[in-house]
Amino acid sequence: MKTHILTFTLSFIFCLAARAELKWEQTSVELRPATGDKQAIGHFKYQNAGKTPIHFKSVHASCGCTAAQSQKDQVGPGEKGEVTATFNIGDRTGTQVKTVTVETDEAANQKTVLTLKAIIPQELEISPNFVFWKQGEKPAPKTIAVRAGKDFSVKHIKVTSSSPDFQTKVQETGEGQFKVDVQPNETSRLLASTLTIQSENSPKTFYATARITTAPTAPVGPGAPAIQKAPGAAPAAPTAPARPPAPTGQTR
Amino acid sequence: MLILAALSLLPGVGQAVYLRDKISWRSPIPPSEMVRVDQAREWGDSVIWIDARPDDQFARDHVPGAILLNEDRWNELLPQFLAVWSPGKKVVVYCSAQSCDLAREVAERLRKTTQPPMENVFVLEGGWEAWLKQKP
Image 1: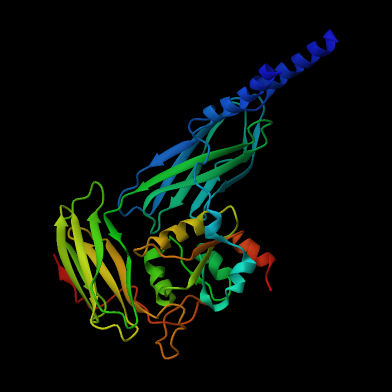
Image 2: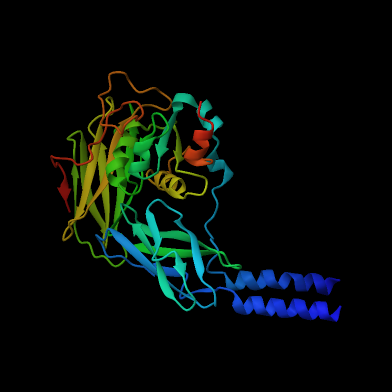
């Protein structure tokens, strides 16, 4: 019996000593991309601290917005390398957390989750982005709050409406804080406007939408103008153009 | 016996402490904000389908009538959605599979578009993969 225990213990110790072991310098990376950056790239460095080679079975990201890749398929004993995670920022804002799952053929700890945290600076915070009136509703003004993001100083903003059917009025309510009142001329027709919001000293443009909608559960009118749709998109309704041409806005 | 039971808990506790940074603390989507393919189909024309996947995946195939709305081009694509949305419409957002986050993120962002938050915004259980399995 004692021989069996001894054999088992020795085998266990031998296996521990001989096993492959991928040591990560860090499994979590925090990035702070600059305004206007298109991508944020995280580097996760590793070393094979074991005595046998390690093979990557898969490296995949939690989101289609992130591309993850390992430099090599096999890591020899003592070898170093890194997995890169490229996060496409797109129109994302705020704190974004994406993960990359790395699967190896190690006996233990086969899956490692790498975390990429990107804090995307937001120059202007706009809430809400969409104001609407039901058809026939009183055309009272509705308010959009605009405030400068953390670490940004904004003294003036300019708001332009793509449609003359909506009026906008900007008021400063505090340091870096503004109130944009939006008012339709009428609500009897289905109308829409894109509101372009810009701060001084910044080329970046922000958007909000104002619209007269159909009443709840009512079908969209057959006479409604057609919109530019994605292939196979849903039924037509009046739209707010994505890039408005003629400003009728106001600067504050 | 109790000592053995307590000892058996030690590895688990140790792992939880050691791996605390690796554990995803992202809250799961509440069941009330999820919808199954068959349920969503029953809603018929009162549903707006939103495809939250990247452009190329949408271009390959998508739920008939779905609108492309992803965070890669949010500012550009949002007006298409707002043009067809009206109060009372149900919105079903999907991405590629159960494991993807894009639908949850787009749904959350959509809710915040209006004040008070937009209602009836759901995430499709199982995503595009589930739709394909139950394709009529």
